[in-house]
Image 1 (spheres, rainbow over the protein chains, first blue to last red):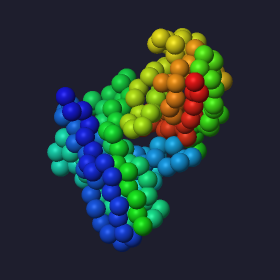
Image 2 (cartoon, rainbow over the protein chains, first blue to last red):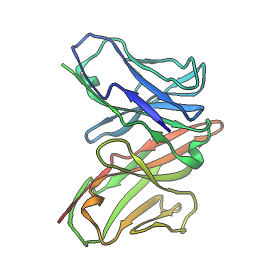
Image 3 (cartoon, each protein chain N blue to C red):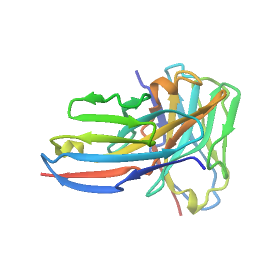
Amino acid sequence: NAGVTQTPKFQVLKTGQSMTLQCAQDMNHEYMSWYRQDPGMGLRLIHYSVGAGITDQGEVPNGYNVSRSTTEDFPLRLLSAAPSQTSVYFCASSPTRTGFLNYGYTFGSGTRLTVV
Amino acid sequence: EDKVVQSPLSLVVHEGDTVTLNCSYEVTNFRSLLWYKQEKKAPTFLFMLTSSGIEKKSGRLSSILDKKELFSILNITATQTGDSAIYLCAVVNYGGSQGNLIFGKGTKLSVKP
């Protein structure tokens, strides 16, 4: 039972490079989301999806793209990395689009990204 | 603007002490409040609180919600070094058919032997 799997665990990018953070869940969860966690800022929502083919912006979406072609996968793309995107990124999922109301979220183990 | 405020931001105690962590909130469509414990990696779920005045308890941890005064507390009694972590409070903001969790900045608890 893998739960929510994030890859890579660590990444260093140069300014201007692009990359994709991967998130996969094997629980058939409808709802998936991406958060970033910065010191003193807590967890902030980047993008979320309530099902395959449906995505929406969260609190801090600029500089990030997402897509949801399958229920299992929800990749986060950095188009042109900037030092301000240095952070720890968490993927989280919930059984249904309203399942988090009763179950909260299941979090992945995070990706620590450094942009130099 | 919806917000969740936790206090204190950090706390250092000794084993055996009792601690109280605070979470206050202002959200448009409050549905419930959650507490998470974050050690080195992913946050792990502790409690979900929906109704005022009903204490949730798990071992040495307990939590209660006051929907009138818009706050919750998380109590940890007889603290152990394994309680050292960041404790996150999150509020479910849900209106119509959309909603999400709004997180506070967390309280970093350090328990010294």
